[in-house]
Amino acid sequence: LLVDLIEAYITSLSSNNSFPSGEGESPPSALLWAWYLRSILHEQVAEYAQGITLINKCIEHTPTAVDFYELKARLLEAGGDIQQAADVIDAGRDLDHQDRYINNQTTKTFLRAGREEDAKKRIALFTREQGSPEQYLYDMQCAWYELELADLLRRKGEFGKSLRKYMAVVKHYEDYHEDQFDFHSYCIRKVTMRAYCDLLRFEDDLWGLPHYGRAAEEIAKIHLHIHDNPSALESDAEPDYSKMTPAERKKAKNMARKKKNAAAKGGSKSDTKSNNTNGGSGNVKKSKPHAIDEDPSGKELLA
Image (tube, rainbow, N blue to C red; front, side, top):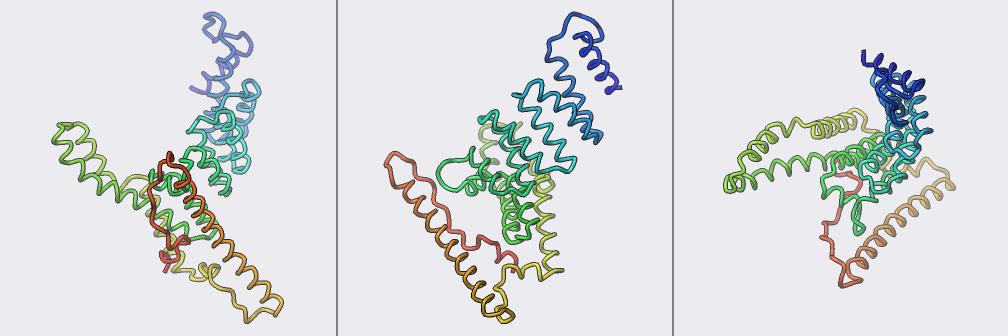
């Protein structure tokens, strides 16, 4: 019934520039949003090709509307073309650099497409200029980003780093649980009983919320995968030089040494930049120091 109604609207607006009721002439945008609504209905019944055809007409009509690019990206992703979906939604993001929502959706799509560096560049646009965007997102308890990044790392086989991100989400929920005690005396003292009841209901369902359940499930899956496939961790181990020819051994050792030096050089550069940023000007507010991460690859979590 709804599809028939929208189809009737599109037919009438295309031919007569008015709705079937015939009550005056409709603005040009009426047909545009009728196409958009019909494309959404195509999406809901998995008719992705038809939906993309209609949303392309919307983009040709009004190429500056961000909503059309977001819908097209969703249709492409659902249809299996995640790489093109990422490019399309990034084109929509480029139309409005102040829109945090579309920037977040672009970041999420890039992560699902396996384009980690592009995703980090996009999410960094809305984080503090000082310090690490990763640390800022952790401090802000941005669980959706950590879950998407953890999924990406898991697909790449970097189980230690993936496990760290999933554990970070679990830590957020543990903090929620602990922080509730600060509100008991406050709410009673301020007589904010309605908010207090909402808090109690939230805490009752805390461990059943989707993000926590997803993180806990993936942590269990990684541990089970490592238990069943111990060889999955061998990629991080030192190669067996005894089975190599002298030339191969020399090349492998040189590559390992370069990687180690590059990692050490990158760490020293980030430390120097942080020190210069915080100490270079008396007017710049110093960021809160963070503990040194002694296990960035998550090897201890996999032990």
